[in-house]
Amino acid sequence: MPVDYTRQGPVGVLTLNRPDALNALSREMLAGIHTALDAAGSDPEVRVVIITGAGDKAFCAGADIATMRTASASEARDFAGLGHAVGARLEAFPRPVIAAINGYALGGGCELALACDIRLASERARFGQPEVNIGVLPGWGGTQRLVRIAGLAFAKELIFTGRMCDADEAAAHGLANRVVPHASLMNEATALAELIATKGPWAVTQAKLMTNLALDGGQQGNLDRERDLFALAFTTADQREGMAAFFDKRPPAFEGR
Ligand code: DAK
Image (cartoon, rainbow, N blue to C red; front, top):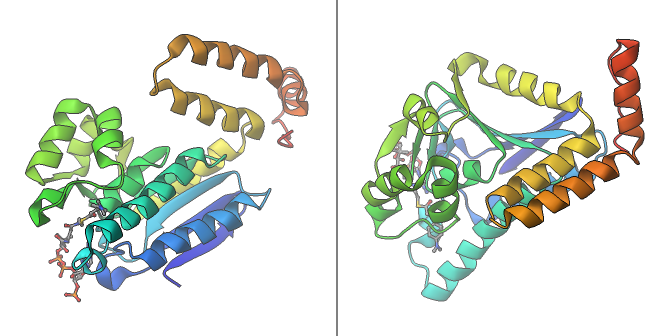
């Protein structure tokens, strides 16, 4: 399978599994991501998803250059659309998605990580948008999401030069949330996922929705929507349980409703 999916308690783990090609994203891989997200999304036990890459070298070295090499403009447009659809799916996915970046995250691989909610980087991670090296520009959202996440100046530098940056530089610009030892990457990602999984699931879902909207402008409308969702939280069992547990000095038992 080009994309493996397993569940460990409340955490769904999706592994890009094409290590011989540094997990480069073919059409089959993109379809595999959708299939894995279908499985995670239809499983009520799953509260957080982790995406990582198989092997020791790469999270994902980008779109499959072999697929693109002889593409016509309309085929390229279609391929770009498949990548955009994965990015949109991850952003809209009702559970948080953590990218556990175990090596190269280049081109479409960096763009895949950018569509996730949180990026944990191994000290061996390398980020970049090297598309200009092969005569194209980022086509899976890099010109937009990298700017929003890491800032215009740094995004332009990475995109215009095609150079890679290491994990520390990525973290300094907000591209990685933090850098962890390579050997403990999955443990750290799982611990973070499990921490989020202890929180009120309904509230976490709404918080993801609202924080994503923050970058789309329209602050007053978003604040109004935040107020409405906050009010709606007081119709949920999770709110009653969370506040009761606080005063009972016990961990809450959330049901996600
Ligand atoms: N696609 C296909 N195969 C790849 C690949 C990729 N992106 N990256 C690596 N591979 C393959 C290599 O060809 C090699 O295969 P074999 O020769 O063993 O058969 C194998 O993975 C191992 O790679 P290397 O031998 O090159 O390994 P090294 O350690 O020497 O170098 C590297 C690692 C990551 C520095 C190097 O592989 C590299 O530079 N890879 C390419 C990275 C890259 O340029 N990524 C960006 C791809 S472009 C758009 C849609 C999408 C996009 C743009 C536009 N539209 C349609 C508008 C997105 C584009 C991209 O993502």
